[in-house]
Image 1 (cartoon, rainbow, N blue to C red):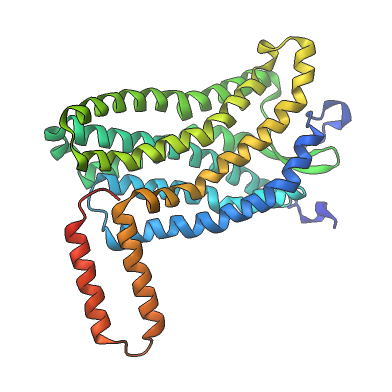
Image 2 (image 1 turned 30 degrees about the horizontal axis):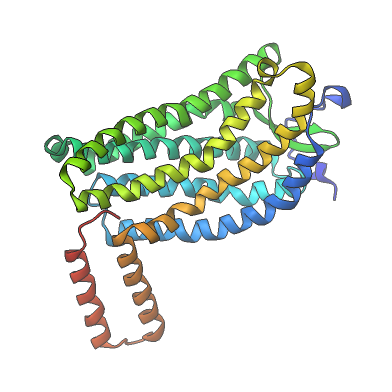
Length: 352
C-alpha cells in the first residue's frame, strides 16, 4: 500500500536521514506490534461498554444528586477519551501512522488531557470524601451540584492548558522509511523542552496528587478510627480502591519515562548505552499497562459500589423485559420492577 498517497497535501513531514533519526529499540517495536493491538482492542471493547454503563447509571438512575456523582461522571468521561483513541494507536503500533497530521495532534493531545483530567478528578474525589468526613458541617454547604459542576469545568480547562504542548509539538514525521506520529520539540532547545514537559507530567500527574491524597486520607483515617462509622468506611472504600489502582497502573510508566528523559544525568556513558534498549521496552510495556486503567474503574464499581450493583441489576432486568415484552409488555412485571427500583433507591444509602 502506498502510504504517502494517504497523506493530505499539507501534511507536515520531517525526514531526518539515517544518522539523525531518533533511536528506537527493535525489541520495543516488536513488543508493541505484537502485544499492543490485541490488548488495546480488548480494552476498547470492555472499557467502552463499562464506562458507558457508568455514565448511563449516573445520569439515568442516580440523577447526579451530589458532588461525588459529578466527579465520578467526569472520571468516566476521562476514561472514554482514552478509549475512543485506542483503535488509532492499535493500528499505529501494528503498522505506521496513516491518519494524517491533524489527527496525530488531536489524538496525542486527547491522550494527555485524559491523563491529567483522570488524575485531577481522583484528587477532587479524595477532597470530596475528606470534606464529607473530616469537615462534615462545612461540607453541607460546599458539596453541592453547583460547586461540583464549576470545579469540573475548571479541571477540564486546566487539563486542556497543561496538554497544549502535546497539541503543538506532535507531527507526522518520516523516520526510517515510515511515517511516525511523534513529538518534535523546537530544535534550538529540544532537550530543555523534553525535560521540562516530562517533569511537568510527573509533578502534575503523580507527585502533587500523591501528596494531596496522602494528606486527605491520613485525616480521614483518624476520623474513622475514632468514630467506627461503618457507613463512612464504605463510602471511603470505593474512592480508595479507584485511587490505588490508578496510581499502580500509571506510576511505572511515568517513572520509566522520567528515567529515559534524564538518563544522561542518571547513568554513566557505558550504562546509558546498555539501558537504552531496556528503557525502550520498559516504556512500551508500562504504557500498555497504564492503558488498562480505562476499563478498570467499572469493574471496581461492580465489586465495591453497592448502589452500582443494584442499579446495574435494575438496568439488566429492564433490558430483559424490553426484549421479552416488545409490543405490549406484562403489566405485573412492570409493576414489580418499578416497586423494586423504588425500594432499592430508598434502602441503599452508601456511595456508588
